[in-house]
Image (cartoon, rainbow, N blue to C red; front, side):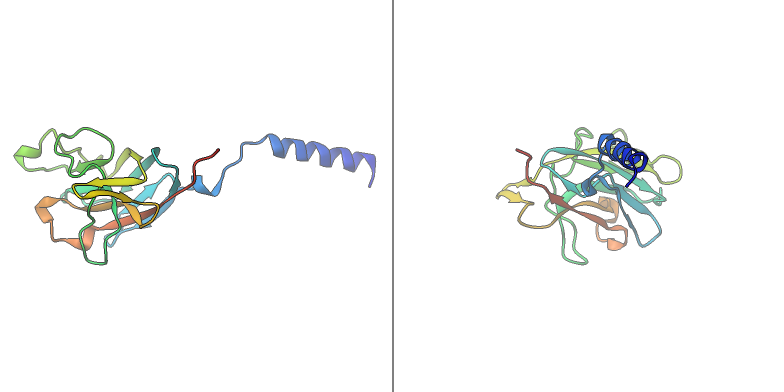
Length: 172
């Protein structure tokens, strides 16, 4: 191998090593719902307490939804229990009520869709979900970022979308 080729290869290797590395855990995950709506999460592999950016597109703005981190339900069942429970105060970042036409008591609590049925929210997700009966460890059972129709269409499972979350071991 000539000195020129060797030198070029060494420079290429050095540049490659200096470039930021993107791990598989930072890849955006997108799932499509039954009406063409999409739910995307900035990652599906996180450490406990990490922030995830969640985006929705093409949602029906006439249907209110809940965005939450919940135990993955059996097919046809409501996702529950969920981290943070039902967000009745409109604050926090573990669950959201998104509706452009909430009932009168929901005005100011529900977040409106952006035009085109879009939303962007940040969720801080821990590896456990606290319930009245104790804690559920999402490292041992499947939990997911979930979308479901809000309480005005509680039995409507056609709007359900899930992105399962895997927790990584903390770096030492």
